[in-house]
Amino acid sequence: LSAVAQFFQNAKLGTEALVQHKVQALREARVTYVDGRPFHGYWRIRESLKSASAASTRGGYQDFNFPLAEIAPFVERFANMTGVVVGGADFIWQEAEPNVGVEP
Image 1 (tube, rainbow, N blue to C red):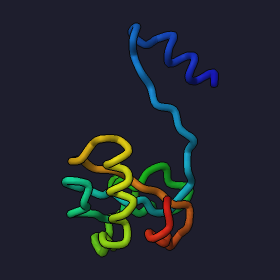
Image 2: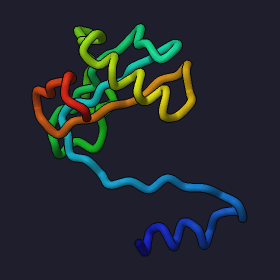
Image 3: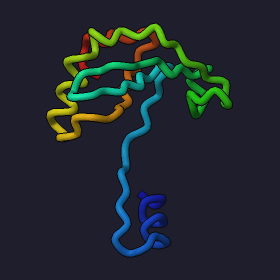
Image 4: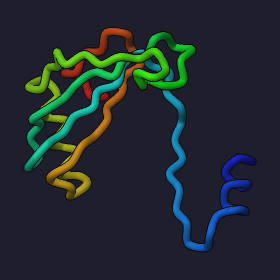
C-alpha cells in the first residue's frame, strides 16, 4: 500500500489508478472482438515464471494457434458487463496449459 500512497502523492489531482494483484502465469490470452464476438486471439507466453513480461523483447513469444470458439462465451460476457462491444481484452490463467473453456 505504500507504493499506492506514493503514487497519489505525486499524481495530479483527479488521477485514477487501477490496482490489481499480480498473477504469476506462463500464458495470457489477448483477444480482439467486435459486437462481443472474438475475431482474433493469440497466446502471449513468458519465457519463465521469473520473467516479468511476455514481451518478445523480454524472451516471451506469441502463439497464434488460439481456440477462439472456446473463449467466445467469456468474451461476450465481458463485452456485456462492460458495455464495450468493440475492443480487446487480456485473459489470464495460472495454469501452464489453461483450459479456456473454464472461466479465467
